[in-house]
Image 1 (cartoon, rainbow, N blue to C red):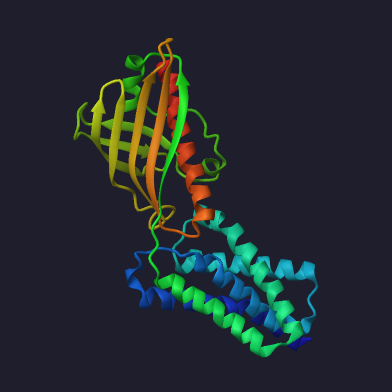
Image 2 (image 1 turned 90 degrees about the vertical axis):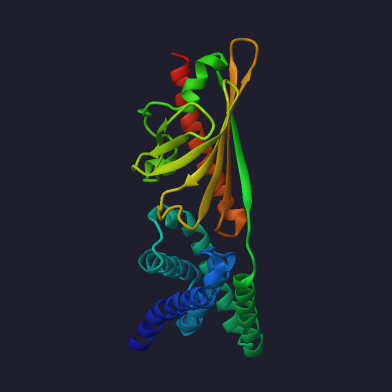
Length: 301
């Protein structure tokens, strides 16, 4: 009984220790990565974690349901270690958790199949291949940019809307987006130093953090474009995403209404893109819509 308990605990302790060590060594020998978190850290390493855990648990004859439960617990431990040692924010950990859980579980079932068949050469070759993929991915260049665009019809002409686009008073309506509700900062107010190209502009969020902006296009009643010159050092975004530029375009529809278009350009520093860009687009879109809905309310008064 004691041996079984020890093996069960080792299945949690050793894989997490090895994975954290691998990540630490990778950051030390690859400091030029610029803080980019590659897909291998969220896919290959969780799979390896699951495989290693299955090796310790192979004698326990763990049933499938229990294996899923153990793997989820393993994922929770990995997420807590990321919070402690990697300084990740709580919202980031909520976002990453489905990916971690999915691939730890995948690795655990792969490991059980591998060790039940006991093909040692094949098993070693497969694990070596995963490690090789991790190394190649870690030293490869990663670059991704995207633009998100949203539109809203406002029952007012551009000259009534423009001042609210340039700067607007504090948003008092409650947050609707679920990530804002659980703690992600939401946009609250913008201020501007002057109504001209080169002027400073600030986008203030609910936690007091501010994005510093510089107006680069000031086409009255038509186009306001601004570059982000400084973004807050928030653990939820620091090293994960860079917001480069924002833009509001007003199109007069000729019938007393205006189409307000909000555009944002960003660089993503977390991979795989197919997963994280879904979140980045969703967050960016909901930032747009919260601001644009407020502009609509102010302009239609």
